[in-house]
Image (tube, rainbow, N blue to C red; front, side):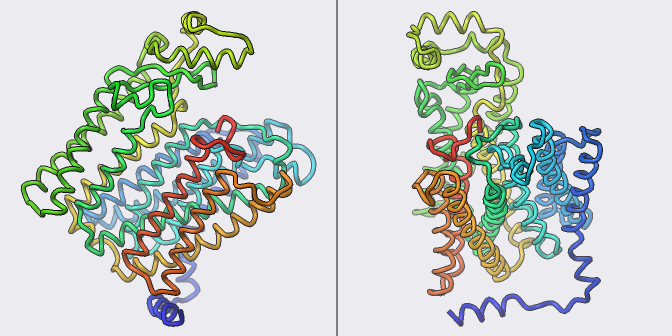
Length: 522
């Protein structure tokens, strides 16, 4: 253990900097926080939204800034222009300013909406962690500050190109969840709630950046581009191959060549899905091409055949283009499709009739369900908040395929732009060293809050178990590194696994597995 610690100390020499130099180095962190505080104070003093100073507008500005930052940082890897380098840092800081202020102003808006109950618990009651949308804003704020802390130094700037695209996908997905303010049940009113969930947002943000570092390490360590492509294509197989699972038409895309989305009535998503024209067949074609790419790249992995490898990359690039077209067509149909209720497949109605019967506590036939849909067809709409997990998965797949194709095409430029492999390894160790105690505090404060609200510290709820498994993955990273000297690829794989478990705990539990932590209306 002592040897491992000495090694890490050797990797992290203290810089002899004057106090003004240290302060100047912290400006990319201090200025966006100061800007966020200023925006919050203006909103509080005004007592109402002023110009763009309200939560939804600020979050949209944060997304635009983060997108610009991702594009600039990725482009700078290949172009290497000082202005792009500085603009990448500036837009990241600007995005964090808008992200943090938009998240905190939601606190003010929630209190104004309900009238600010008296007492300290009344103040904490409105802390912006009432649903999954608010949690996602905190998650992105945590990832934003973690990224800024590292990339404020020019020598680490390229690492932002690996974390910012993920941050963009997560924030965009969060915006699809809907920004409505939820009223919490009294049982959850506790000052432990903001403590517990704030720790979660910061921990998850640090985990996101550690994921980017792990991927950077693998690239620097010489992992074959074909292996990365296989994993990205495998993610595509998972996303496209399971769309529609659990719905009335189970596995709609692979077996029916149809893609359906939930209809909305007012602000409520109904368990009734309608078909988007041409999206399903294009998804099925993309899935076929992804399967072909996986098969060819796996064959090359074992036989090292240049011709097979070339065809594998052609199939992978074709899948990337098709997936971008899928996403574009889906967004186009969501915004332009007229009278979507008329495209509900007949197989949807039996399950919908059962649901209607449960709501009305009266028998409802399939014919009754069809008549109800026809009578209310003008009120049934499409919304990007109807299937956020599916849309998020499709967006994430488009970004993953594009980045893998781009980084593989310009592999040498990417590897050259990244810091040295020992530096990345050291940064990965430090970020996990920050994430692990935060995840530990997450479990401890969650247990205390659970005991206060439900009378037990631990109940094996799905989200509790997910958080514990993610904690164990990062514990495994530190244990194997400190006690057994593991580092390099094996440690990087632990970090990748840990973040995958964090994503499942954050999103999957809320939509897939029922439990006390499944958000009402997310």
